[in-house]
Image (cartoon, rainbow, N blue to C red; front, side, top):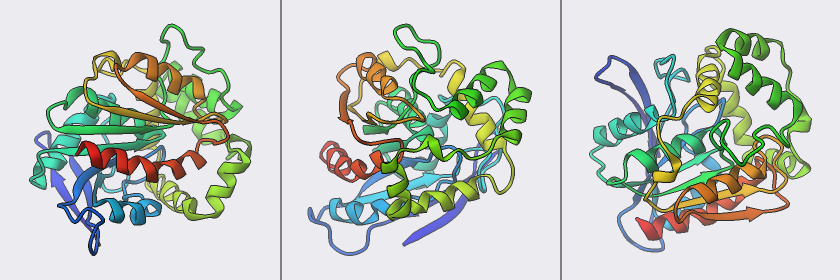
Length: 284
């Protein structure tokens, strides 16, 4: 059962929140572990339906929200990735949750890492799936291996908001951004992603604009100072966020575990997230 509601933040913004509790008994028979889901770009914050069965087995309660500019949440132009930690804490506070796990995929992976860095006393562990490394870091050719449309979009973000808006308005969906494994995932359980992506842009481009600009700007935190457990999942064939990004993060984050899936792309790697829930449950 998923309930939805809005919370009002101290700066006057609204966040639209989702709370999905597992039904029935879990394998552990224990109190559910709250896990904060950070959605991709573009999308809305609906908890990941394809992972509901695994979450029920492991006793996971999904908490999530529409990132600013998406769905029912107020835009916040100029937000950095670090801002996700304060929004996450506000959502947890509204629900009376002290400690929780975090899972983010694609664009949500970087927002999940912000929680790892800035909420160490509250976060039990973080799973980051197919996430970008910080822009311009030494030791990484940041654009290498990206499909052409992704390069163009993020190079426009490096330039400024106006150029990014023009690029988004003129670009078309390129099926070559995804591997055959990705397309197979989209024909199966992860067809859900198509629906939430469409709903993510239904009210405009504010969310995707602010996301893209945040990815190439200073993050507002140093991945090298993360102290909570981090599990990185990355597909070796990813054409959206090439595998070098996950490898850089694994080197930068102390104690991070990187699970490489050589045949997976940007979406099919999400099939591995079901196993990652047991990793989170152990740490919760």
